[in-house]
Length: 303
Image 1 (tube, rainbow, N blue to C red):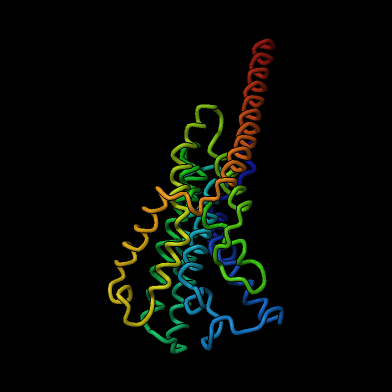
Image 2 (image 1 turned 135 degrees about the vertical axis):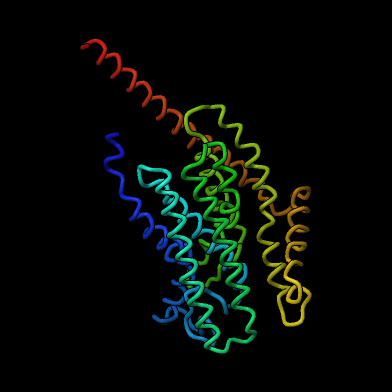
């Protein structure tokens, strides 16, 4: 009870989750606009439409939008663990993140239509992508903050394979796109593995399904890029958006049996890092239990 006294109110979580979704999730997009304003990089950020809160009209917008909306949702959902009440924290995180998606998405859609962006249907499609990706990230964040330890690795699987592009997007002139940086992947996967252990060594078994999911989802980037390349006026994907599901499925299915692009060396580093983090978490939990037992014995002795 003493620990919960220092937790903040769930009302603050509503504001924090909303800010986390946009300001943190779309930080690469915001920084690129800032770089252009300050002259650090040249070229228009969003063509002739002016600045939009979300990259509806930027080059390579589909892949970047998915990644940033998902990472933002993950951060927004993770704020659910801040207050003492899990239910209140989850409700506040959900409301805050959804409000942020609605406000920024709706504003971008309205501004894009006012600016006569080529292809009036694109802003609505991007709005749908934003909502779906943000919701997936939000679910992952909630599960990471409030779910059982063995499921955290599964919840973090998709963010792990996408965080590489998000981080490179922070650099001047870089879009949110994959570069195959093995050590970024290794660190992200190692942290995900480490967080999937709380108090029992048997929770290490949760690494097996998480690793399998990450292995397959490493084809997410090629899948997103394949969808993006097929979006052009008159294309089959433009006429029937459900074709995107077939494209994604084909990429993910092939990743399950082909070792190409899986960065096997990074997996070794990730496993070692995850084991180190898990060992630290297990030892801290053991020390906490030992301290509680000592306090109980002392209180019984004085009773």
